[in-house]
Image (cartoon, rainbow, N blue to C red; front, side):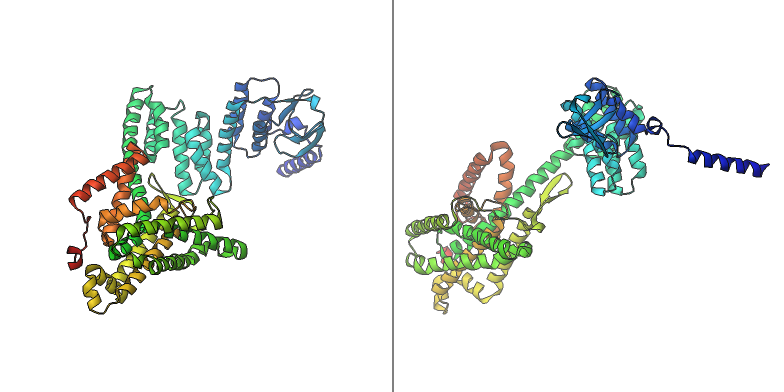
Length: 540
């Protein structure tokens, strides 16, 4: 009997397999049935409800219909209300609304467009965000989870639950949990679940979390409101602390730029007492050297672009140092002891250099690119850190350390220090002070040149580049102590941080004026700066 039953079942299966395919209506999937709801002259709210239903299916194929709806390419036939995608002129090319496969053509008059407005497109965008949670690409899923945190709706709780159950990547799973918590807070779920959701949102602790909690603080359940208020206050305190940290980071970043711009001036001004108004143009020459190197690499060896700054650094040092040496030998050495004439002469040189660059390169800004390792940014808590600023800070400290080593551990550096402390005694000991002056001026100019390489990555490269740093450089040198490298470091960082803390309250221009006034008052009390040079020549 059992054997007979088995044979009957097998025969029945063969008969069913031999039958013709079922009608299209019987084969429709759940998604296809929902797409059919777009047909007819429906209200915008009904269309948006259908979009949410499609997103809830989790079927990636519905993206074809949703994209077409947002683009104004979703139609239905007037004759049978079947929904299709239509593109092109008359006749329109027809595509299946679910699979996107071609389905022939149709006269434009036979079709009616499914109408949408901006709010409908926003709902479609949210729906597409939830669909991408099922993408095989981790980056797409991560981005979708982040976007859903701010746009999640109550209808998406189920979708997020399903995505959480399937997700295996820990950081994406954490972001999905945050998005689900945001959706729960907009739903009709129990107070207990919402309290747990507030805790999840609060743990995120950023401005977006604060925005999600703001809706709960506005009213509703007293327990939820009190809990959300406490969580929001904690987030506000955290944001304020990270905001101060961000200001300090910006201040250190600005301080490193000022250090690079001023460190060469600290040497020339400290050793020689020369007020070099062309120091900014040495920075500008370094920046233009970087531009020339990058143009040559783009034209002849694009694969070397990531090494362009390493190639530009020694060249910028040589170019700016050579110009500085030429200035000292041809002009400045005849003006020692006459500070006013030196100031006017170097100012004239700065104008000549600016005009020469304008004639050769033009007056417009030149494009200097960032190598790949200096592009982009990363997060530290709630603080954004850009890679170019990070590398410039490290570079400024490296230049400072190298210069400190050269002045304290090399023969040339010891001679420079000797001339700084007592020029007459150094000369009596056989040190060629004119040669030391020339080499010192060339060194200071060369360092300004490599500062230009770094500044080309964060500022516009133009003939006026150096003018934006010359006054700040002098302020750093005078505030820190003329000729003292440690003073230059402390002065640059102090002024950078002070500027960034004043800017939010006083603005950039007024902030600089306040800093200048404070330096003037400081110099009245300590004319030689924070770290005054010592020696018989200085004290005389």
